Amino acid sequence: MNQKQSGKADTYYGSSGFYVPDPHQTQHKSPPRTHRRRKGCLTVVLVLILAIGSLMWYRSQAAARGDVTPPTLNTPFSIQHPIASIRARDAEQATWGAISAQDPAAMEHELTLENEFLRRATTQAREWQVLLLPTPQQFVPPLLGTLVVTSPFGMREHPVIGQELEHHGVDLVAAAGTPVMAVTRGVVVWRGNKLGYGNCIVIRHGTHLSTIYGHLSHIGVDTGQSVSKGEVIGLSGSTGFSTGPHLHFEVRNNGTPVNPLSLLTPNMSVRSSD
Image (cartoon, rainbow, N blue to C red; front, side):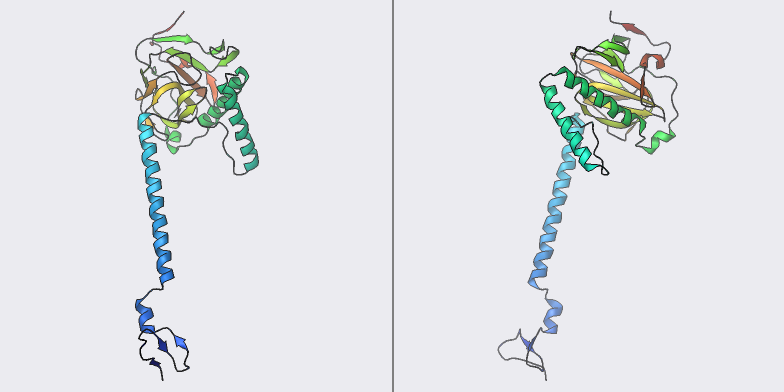
């Protein structure tokens, strides 16, 4: 016959005389170890929620200010080739160190990497809205008033590096803080900071054309955001490889740079600074 031992209300003995848990108590009482585990898991979840929330808040504040530092890497990490990716990124870090020492060869190499990065950014449709946008035939100017070109499209002597290099866009006169506008409707496929281009925005306009806005002092749009023609997307500045405030405006057709002036509206006033 099952009975409780006198003086020990919390101990239950079966007919065999060995200890068995009291079935009435086990129904209402969780083992202390299980309770501690639940409490520990809850603490970890709360810490993760706070950490993620703080990170999202910090990024939103940085985006609102236009702060996008440190510069992003040009070499994407590949899951299929992790070792090669790590080596490429290490090599790029070494290039950044040489750039800080104003090494012209390293600066030219950085621009080559950035050109390949932007080619990928302007040919890979990251947003489904891009496929629904018609390819525009003409652009409105990225700045108000007469566009003054200080450096044309094509070969030129780079003002910072001092070597003959291909200029993939045009440099336009713009005082620091001048509003920069999207030249036509599109979707922002990348925004960030590059060592050469500085603070930069890449917008896709349909399946073929993309525009790039470089050396900005402030970025006012986010990746994936739809923008309309003439909408202010940032402010001009002198970030990256730059000798003074201006706007680097670039157009790419299927990733290949083309002369941006050829796509501006015919009645647009453009002149050279010379």
